[in-house]
Image 1 (cartoon, rainbow, N blue to C red):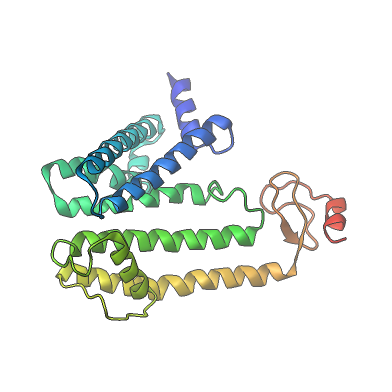
Image 2: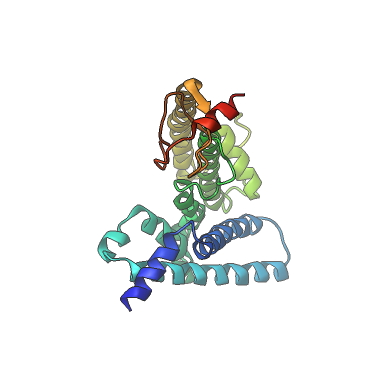
Length: 267
């Protein structure tokens, strides 16, 4: 039983073996699919299509619930796992749908946070494994982080404003447009929230945009300045492409760098 628990925990976090990749790629795909379902439901679709999307989302929800229970069961320290960042994100992804059965609309707002589950794969270079340049990976992470935050805010403002302000927030695209112009502090003023919660979300968007965008761009600039003195030397262990000119070992995995590769890359 202990061995089975260890295997389950390993495969749920592993991104190297074929089984681990298949499991986590499936989870990432389901996260994107469920987010797409949320967006589609904001549009005027037929009743049959709505029922099909609802059934598909229910299946995805069951898979997420089983996954969470397996992660909890296989965790060595269950209390620590329950209060961990990723566990809280997972709960935010599944609880709103179950609680929504008793129509607690405020709690169901949290369903838009489901896309944040993909953060688990960013730090491990799972979603951007095909990008060899470290600067490219960082740039992709910045773009994804910005998209995820805008997506969440768009879903929240739509859920809050659509019932009371359907003229301005008729679809997810309307909410997405409002979120982008608000977070970038452009503020055209052609779309205005009318509810108190909507206005509060707008303030949070502005504060997030003012704090997040310069920080993310600044991080990218610092990385570009740092790598200006680096050369292209592909590591045979992890394929990291750029290292300091005088580096002997890979800064990511510790593999000894081959000088022949360095000479070849600069020839």
